[in-house]
Length: 485
Image (cartoon, rainbow, N blue to C red; front, side, top):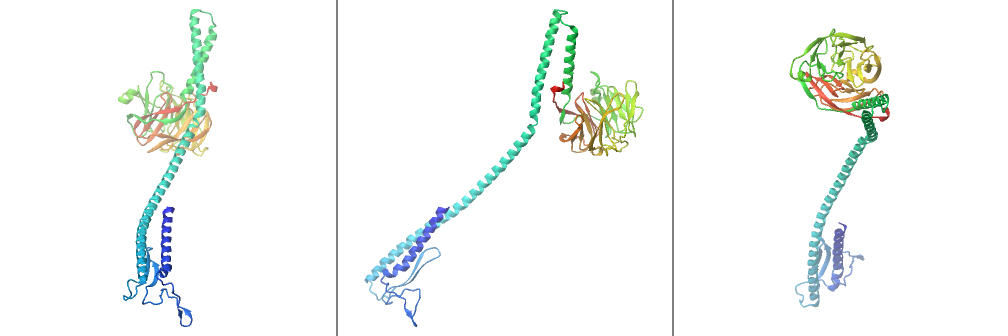
């Protein structure tokens, strides 16, 4: 843009020079170079802008030359009287000069027109260049923003993947361990084959010990495979719609192979009848059931069936009862010392849910709250035979703020509510006595959960959701530590 503006400046400067030249040279060309500043009376020169000849009646009078607003040259000339001879030499010179001036005026007009066009073109180009510059700036800023966003996304993804590196290293070690098991099994198989051919070639007791040792190690490995950290919960599967708004239903995780009975308890207090359905199919499709009458009404919805017996909290007390279905009698009862009851420390939805009994891969648990722990959740591992507390853990989570809770592999998972939008957001790990806040989506399909328990055999969550019996599959992240085997 600086080059066209320089051209305009040169043109304007040239026009000023031509104007100056005409104002100084024109009088001398027509013989008016005898002009002097006449002295005014008193000896003061007259500074009139006109240029006067010696004899104004015989000669031309050039008063001034100037430049108009558009840059064109303007000369003020007074012609002589008509009595002058047209063939006078000065007249010819003046005509020639006038022709030159006219030619110059035309050239200046053409130059002015071109200059105006160039100026308009330059102004238009300036607008376009400014617009283009703005667009380039916008593109540059947008590119920087997009680059920054992409960088942040990649960085966040790398932060998510970074913890998987040690896990992958552990999986490499686990793979070697499995190969070792495979080789040992192959060796034992070959030894057994040879033993069939040559009876007595090897010590039978030594061989039996090797088989037992390998069996124990494989069992321990399988137990560790069964456990893991909760990473996801599936969409709900509605099994049945029945009962009131509150209740509980379950299967026995220690039931023998082929025993698929379903246990059903409607309501959360002042009821003592438990329904037994022969199978999940009967529960889904029929109303054929056997009714068991408990010796005391239960409290809340935290009952569990475990190894042929039902464990429940006696209504309006902190007593836990173990009732054997085979003998239809109480096999054990015990107080849960200091545990709140009768709606003192219930879940957020209420319903006398002070004491919640649970089962996971490690056994029987009780979740409750005490005054000593300021109403925060207490976790106790129970002996399923004697109901004595094996060990307890105190947490910093208020029981009344919890929607529901369940145990998986020794970790207590707590939901942030029971109605509407729900998620699993708190986990307490009993193996390390530590807690963390998590964010696992949990679809609350029917908007009111009054029971949520984990079954380690089915690896599923059983829920009572506003008169609907619902199942959720869970995803567990498994880590096998070979040094523990």
